[in-house]
Image (cartoon, rainbow, N blue to C red; front, side, top):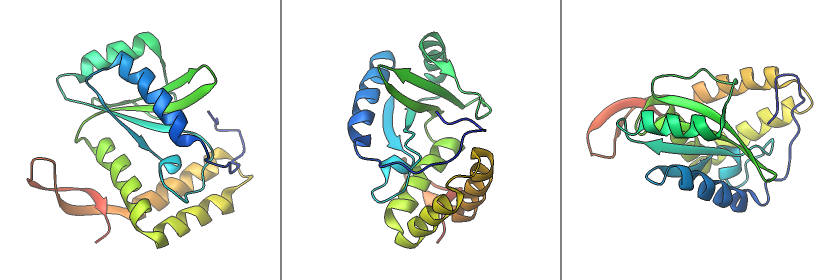
Length: 178
């Protein structure tokens, strides 16, 4: 995993889907009832990447405390992002495979943000081109500089929208610009 002092470099995302499948299998053996989704740049065809893999692990509110205990027993919590009552990031590093495991309560703000960003980049060629340009511009700069610009880009791309959730109810969530 890159840290704050490492330089951003762009890597070929080939093999990301195979790595995701193996990591998802490992996580599923720990949390068999969780929904596991490949998110982040390596999940979007044509998106430049640092080569890090992001895995979204979605659980129900009732299962979140149990999932936290299970992952705390097997993985190290990441220091990159602050944990909340419905989101914790873990560092996965096994058998030469590494990933950021994003444990979320399904439907929470972080869950919607990861999924909406993936959807926006996969469906909007202009947004993908701008994101790739941001990454090219920051190649060789510090991770801190890149992350600040990345957050600003994502915040501008994802704005509050009215969308239908899984139950069909309309709700205001961070969503794709209409």
